[in-house]
Image (tube, rainbow, N blue to C red; front, side, top):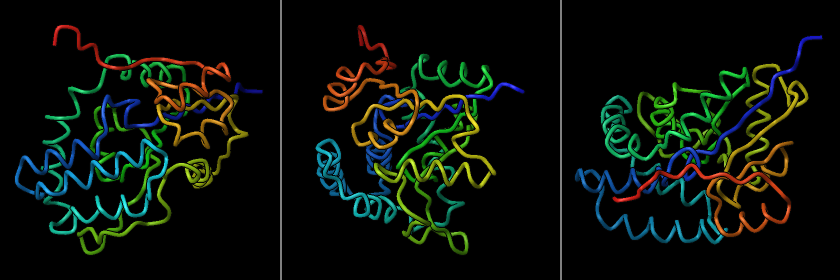
Length: 229
């Protein structure tokens, strides 16, 4: 029988990316005069709740999707791509790029699984050669964002189901793989970390780091080397 491949999944923010894409995007939009500065305080409150594990993901995504409704998707594309080049590319370490490349070269099925909405995440993944994306999906009608989602947010308890739905759409499931691996930094991702055969934590938050140490999970760091900066 042919050897079954592995399935390797990556979280995006604070894992592949040394930072939070939504925070960086909002700050950049404020700098460009596209979003009002008052939004930054709201973002800070949401992020504190995320770190505490008490985030209302529906409210958070509604906040971020509301930024997009003023322009056509086509008008947002050059803004997003300029943002990715200016604020995201410098925050991706060689270690993160190499990890994706190594798993691809091994023949793994690779995907990025993130709560970040797909319009923003897809632009970032172009830096990694555009691997498959399992993400929160923005609704678009007549070439414009509606501010609503398609389906459920790809967050916390919903992440395993989102991965299974993505596989099912391709006629596959987890049993097709010899191993299923997931790299993440956040305790919010425990449902998916606990569902896979090989959980790997990357620059874990304090809550996840304690759990990983107690369970003997692999622990890595892909943060940028800022020595001398």
